[in-house]
Every structure is written in structure tokens, then in C-alpha cells.
Image (cartoon, rainbow, N blue to C red; front, side, top):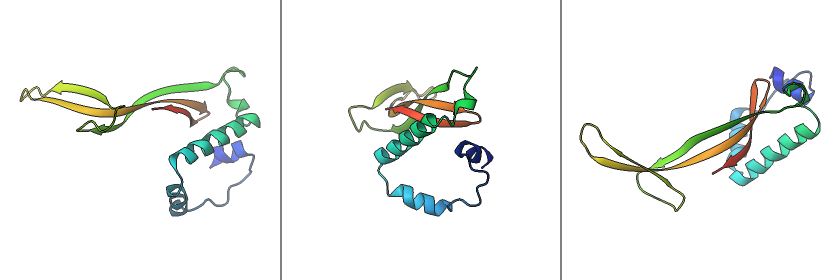
Length: 120
């Protein structure tokens, strides 16, 4: 909690919500709402200059670009599925898997990473 306290300008964080409470709250939100909350929080922290001490050479933001797979399927389930075909070396059987990938831009702040943009 040391880093979070420093960023928020709070000397001490005496208590945080129990994970069951957090999970219950988050499970009721739509994914779009969570993305809006995340975007709002990051914009506010940047606007309040909370991250300025973490800029590279005092002027650059550390941005990490990360591409990764999210889901794989045995059958195509939508028009956006990517397809990978491969051959089993032992049996010679051809297989196809369908998948969804995501590309994310993450803001690097000290030893923390904030997901800023996600492209499906």
C-alpha cells in the first residue's frame, strides 16, 4: 500500500475493503462501465500531476505495448475470430483453433502498470 498511499497523497491507509466486497461490487458492473471508471481515474491522476515524478527524464511517459491472446475456441463463434491451423506431428491430424487477441497500451508508473487502452 506504500505506493498507492504516496500517489493518492495519503500518509496511511488503515483499511481496505475485503476482497469479497470488491468482487461483489465489480460483478454488478458492465465491462464498459469498468473501462470508463479506469479511464476516468487515470485521466484525473494525470490531470492532478500525481504521476509527474515518474516521467522519464522529467518529460516522457513510460508506455508498454502488450499483445496477448484472450480466448481460444474449438469452433468459430463470431466473425471476429482469428484462426490458426496446425498439424499434429505425431498423428498427422490437422486441427484448427479459433481465438481472440487483444492489444493493450499500459502506462508505467514506478513499479505499477495501468492499462490505458485495449483494442480487441
